Image 1 (cartoon, rainbow, N blue to C red):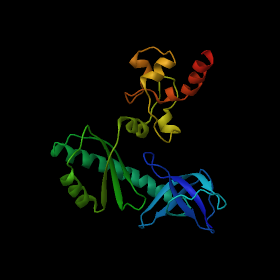
Image 2 (spheres, rainbow, N blue to C red):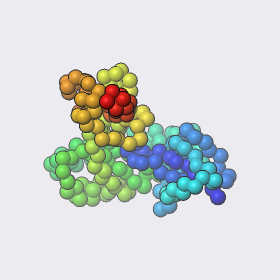
Image 3 (cartoon, rainbow, N blue to C red):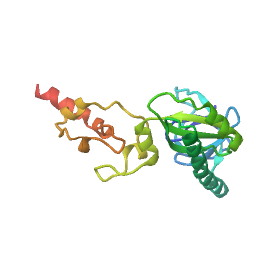
Amino acid sequence: MDRIAEVEVRKLEKDLYFKIPPNVDVGVKDFVLVEFMQGTIDYGRIYKIIEPKTIFSPIVSGKVLRKLNENDFLIIKENKEKEKEAFKICLEKIKSYNLPMKLIDVDFTYDKTKITFYYWAEGRVDFRKLVKDLAKIFNCRIEMRQIGLRDEAKIKGGFGICGRQLCCATFLKEFESITMRMVKNQKLPLDMNKITGLCGRLLCCLSFEEELYGKERVEKK
């Protein structure tokens, strides 16, 4: 039975699982080239390796081809430059169609067979004409992915009021529900400038100590 790698392909997507063929030597934290079932080739970083003896049997998306080499990193760098141009083109198209959406980011797959455009909008957007135009220009599959404000912060990164890099851009895998009750439980000032992040939402780190404060409340009772 093959080992399975849990791979982070993109920041805004859940980690995916890929089989590791016996002849492929890879480890945790390695950047690898992966092939999806449908043939798309992309890259990502191994977050965890699941050994054959484990009971956990995840849904596999494809297989790991190999570690990235110097030439792969050059290709990725070239793709990043093309993403900047694609962003400009898409932004111009959005303006020409007067669509109520904010373009956040663009992502090419390694083999350039698909481009994902991340955007924010208050509601649904009819971007069928936009997609047709982009498909003609880039001659590949176009995916429009609607994301939230916290996702935007995760993509762009930055520093919080604590002086550290944003948790969402460094280690947080999923966003938890953060409420004003957490703020009150931790007796923090109700100053929105001090309890909200760059995204304008309540700080994700409020959840880190919520369990501890909950235990303290129980003990006092």
